[in-house]
Image (cartoon, rainbow, N blue to C red; front, top):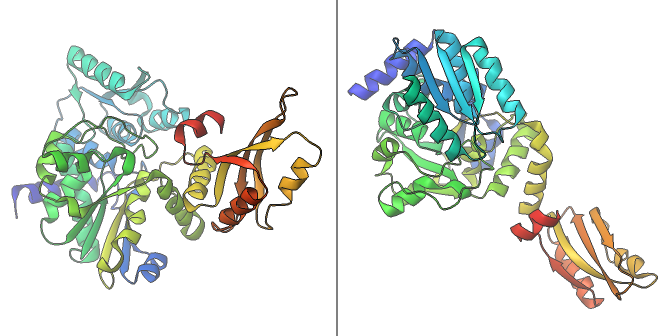
Length: 408
């Protein structure tokens, strides 16, 4: 056994004083769909609903003399650090962006109790991170990176240790979500070549893919924060050192809107609540196709910290991705009966979800912002053909992100 493997097993054993192993559950729905033995490693069922407390625990237990731990996070890392500060009875100062949802702040406060102080600094995470690191240096504390720390990587490897014990050996195929790389680096370092891997990233935060192309960690020009648990602008130096040999062929990038379809499916069919990053591994299964048929596959569901106030947005994104909802701007003639003519073109399964009409008396036409939901994506082809035949002028703005954000 390598030194890393032994350290990971020791860390896993020490964790049992704090929380039990997360379940490894065979999922019949996914197994039947993909013709494989699909298991979910349910990190969404940890005490803080993500795997992040593992790395925080390992880093803290190795520094028993540290009186102050500092971190910057707007989500799962903050909650893991807070939970462990209370467990070890040490002081923690957690910096979060001013824009952090109140629900996440409250959960961090609950986990940390009197052991944690939360400071809201900066509109953007880079500002928050700089403030946290500056404070840590002045106060003489220990800064806890969410992923780019050898002790954190070692702690996240405990997921692999548990997986092997629960499954009775390595799976044939392991699907792992990637953000900054702490979880994937830890699991790869522990399991080595015992299984095949697929590393999955959100399309708007594919920092591993970018690093593999460049041969080094690079900063992304823009990050889509929808899958905030994995939306990282640059992979860690230490994590990439362990991941640099995985190869682009073993990586996948998932569109954020497609993630929403999997989140809804897992909620409606299986009753499993996953955050966007937590759904990444499950969402990758259709892309793997025949590569996993007849094989034993494990997906890491990395987190379930989902705010249900976001559910309407998730449904909207899923419908748009599936082609079941569209927005367009329609030029409506300003004459009696024009609206009735338009409504007569709608099919039996077409439902108007949004309608805003601005009549301007000096013009012969008015602009209508309209949103339509339907049951079959092909219904829109029929509708647009009728609009063309009827002489209506319209513009589909569903995929125009800038315009859609402004008017929808």
